[in-house]
Structure formats: C-alpha cells, structure tokens
Image (spheres, one colour):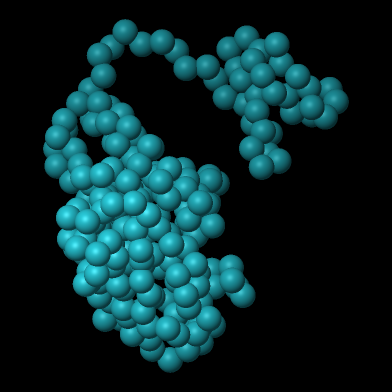
Length: 212
C-alpha cells in the first residue's frame, strides 16, 4: 500500500503495482521494481559485490568523520559518496582476492589545504606522534584548524582515532591508543577541519608504522 503525502497531486511513498514512490531530501521520485533474473552474476558483478562487502562495514569505523568531513559530493549522502569512491579507487588485487588499498583510502574530502612534511613515528609504548609543517596561514590554511588523527590496525581489525587532536599551528600531535596496540602495524592518516568555515581537507596517508 502507498501513502499520498501532499494531496492527490502530490508525491507518494510505498508500492503501487510495479512502481515504488519515495522521497529523498524533499524530492519526490518513483522507480520501477527490479525484475528477477535467472542469469548467473558476471565476474564484474561479483567483484562489485565483494567490494561493497569489503568497505561497507569498514567505513563504519570512521562514520562520524565521514558525515562531517566527506564533502564535495552531489545527489547522495557523505557515506554513499565515500563508499563509491573507495570501491573504485581504494581496492587492490583481482577478484576474488581483493584488499583495501590503504594509501588511497579517503574518509575526508574537501577544499581545505593540507600540510607538508607529514611524518609519523612511535617512540613510546602504545602511542604514535604525528608532525607536519605549515605554509602561510589563510582562509584555507588556518592556524586554528582542527586536527584529526586516524590509525587502522589490519591485525586487530580496528581503528583508533582522535578528532580533536589540537590545531594546525601546533605542528604536532600524539595519538594514544585505547587498548593494546603494541607490536601491531597501523596505517596512519591526518586531516584538518575548519570550524569557522565548515570546510574539511582531504585526508593524507602518512604510511604504516609498528606501534611500540
């Protein structure tokens, strides 16, 4: 059964015969129901399904960062945009042996400028230090831009993240892991966010490091 939302001339939500009505961000639309197919899935279709499985659960580990910082997208949600991008550009290997390409992973995307000489090192137990250098400060590289640090352990299958790790002018910040990460190799990322202008930077991959 469908429900008319704005009178007889308005949009509707639900199923009527072979069509479905819905609304997304105030836009009413209808689409046809997919027809069942007895054809076996192609290798390309199977690869796409595996990519979806690979990233859908993975990206939930940074879902709040994606919601706020994955920008410059159209006609979709930040999560769906991040999912689409990473399925296309952050996969390595051939089906069925597909893996996440960590250097190309994006969870933050925007017009804010990044930094230079980014480095990451572990010199104390269960910690990682991030450092960077700034250029001249301006609206797209502000001294008070918020710093976000992310590390992912393939061995532990978990993220460690700090979304308020200081400001750009500090040129350094420390991530202390919640729990035992010592001995694990983690992939490290850094990004910035301007609260004043609600603009994010595209995250940078700093490499993999073994946590002491």
